Image 1 (spheres, rainbow, N blue to C red):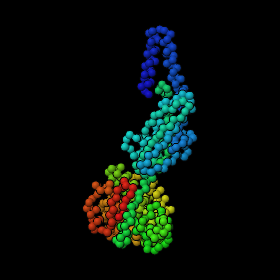
Image 2 (image 1 turned 45 degrees about the horizontal axis):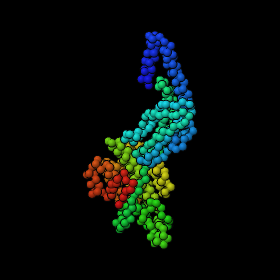
Image 3 (image 1 turned 60 degrees about the horizontal axis):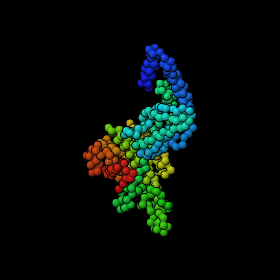
Image 4 (image 1 turned 120 degrees about the horizontal axis):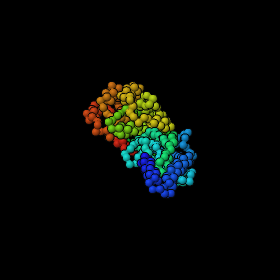
Length: 411
């Protein structure tokens, strides 16, 4: 804009000089036109500025929301390609060009994982609307906010501009991925005797009732004789008991030098804990989740599948930064009261001496039915001596899974 003003000033000065050097009727007329053009351009810009309207929508346009009372809300999954539509309406006879919009956008030409403040340039034809798609694809779960801070309209000669402060927001909720523990279906005597071997062993020996098959049910629960008779899968529903419940410790304190890896591991812990929880509930058993959250150390007991939605919501909105409280402190806090439970799952991306010391001090290291789940993405930073010690000197079952896969085996 600065260069346009300089060019226009030089042009006016040149015509003014020419009026004195070469006297003619044409030069004063040209000078008059040069003086009146900016005034006309400014008036047109002012009308356009009043006439233009801006709104955000995930689909159909909404009413003028230059000052939105309630932000637009969009729910999506991780890595899902989504788009927010920016609607610009021009109710005047002249085109609005260009329009500068300042807001939080995700660049499609850079490897970005969040939104950042950027400038968007566009235009709107006369008496019409213009739609600008704002695509995004987020790699991490959580809550995000897109804000439109300012809209700026220029005149036709690019000499003037008018700015309007805005408070338009869109709330994005990115859900964790749905992961599924894979059940091999091969039940052996060892599997029955060792409840920590597979996630589907959270069932008592007391038969309760029959029900139809639901997605996620273990093949071990199928009543094969009735299934053959009725030509549809029938599940044996087992009676729930305290000794048949499980406990899951989720480690949200692990931090790595690479911020991308840190956030990735936080999501991995969340998605794995949710998947294990969901599987246990679908098998008709209870589960207790323990974690460090925004409100401190939390323990939540789920006795039926209806409770799962609360845990899913709580984990979705957890901060995307590691918890300042140590994971060892969480184990020490709750381990004395959960040792009588059927199986204890510890989900952590980091195996270190502090964790090993806590497991030994709390007695979990030599307790039957303790499963320690970690991730292959952190294998390079892991102390191999600690891994070998856990396998050789403790009763803990160590499982390493791929956090990027939608399925993982508990065998």
